[in-house]
Image 1 (cartoon, helix red, strand yellow):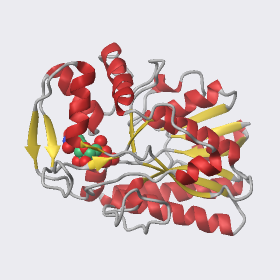
Image 2 (tube, rainbow, N blue to C red; image 1 turned 90 degrees about the horizontal axis):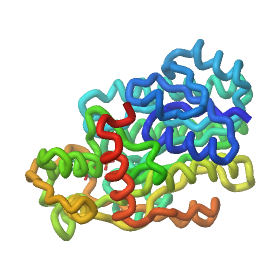
Image 3 (cartoon, protein in one colour; image 1 turned 90 degrees about the vertical axis):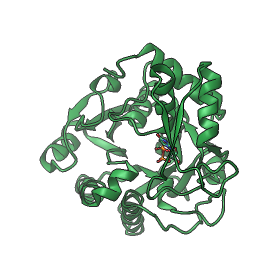
Image 4 (cartoon, rainbow, N blue to C red; image 1 turned 120 degrees about the vertical axis):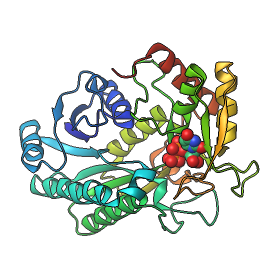
Length: 326
Ligand code: UDP
């Protein structure tokens, strides 16, 4: 059964493609390669196309007899979404709706969606469960939430089954060392700290006066392969009674920016220089997942919950791939 993986050449997408291949599925990657990497899709077919290119998208549905979709393709930087919101509404909403329209036309009923903890905004309490109200504080989170609303409405009308996975902070790299995180420019904390350990550039700490024990933001880091396995479980459980809906994906443990810097220092054995910098607009102080729902409904459990192991896999990949995914 061919499964369309939009954004399958990206960081989380490619780790998911690897797990799908390993478990005997037939992923077909659809990616514009703006941020993704050709090499990252391994043996899966790659269609180089943009979500806005309806003709190419429909041709892909037709020629591969697509039976399900995992939708990663999106713009995903909080800061950029504050500066250029229309880019986010155009890609994450308008183009993504076009994907749903194509699914309906081709009678494809299953979709797993890559959503985000950014839908919650500033949490009223942590850990955050799926019942927590959604009040996104940036256009990135708004667009993810709007698309979830479209999925819910389409599900209610009987046209699709969907699972939306609200990720907390993806980090780490393929434990077998084939895939890793390679963004340009890099904005994520773990690879920034690792790069800093390797090249000595100081890490900016965005905000040191948050209402947290050490004043820096707390996030829930989840290993990218654990995320990938959750997509596999979601796909395999789609259509079973009561599984449709939204699920948080995190480990349930929060680490501050300073704690992550400390972990990278311990794992690499290298002292990291930091500079106190202004807070990043739209950044909530604390995001930690309550992930009881996905554990119970889909039987998901993380294989790499420890922050040291997450950082260690990322560090090993960086050391072995100085030019990234190339
Ligand atoms: N962060 C930081 N310095 C950096 C990059 C990130 O202090 O160079 C902080 C950021 O403000 C947030 C946390 O690290 O509190 C994780 O940020 P990241 O961009 O990795 O993920 P996000 O939480 O935005 O999805």
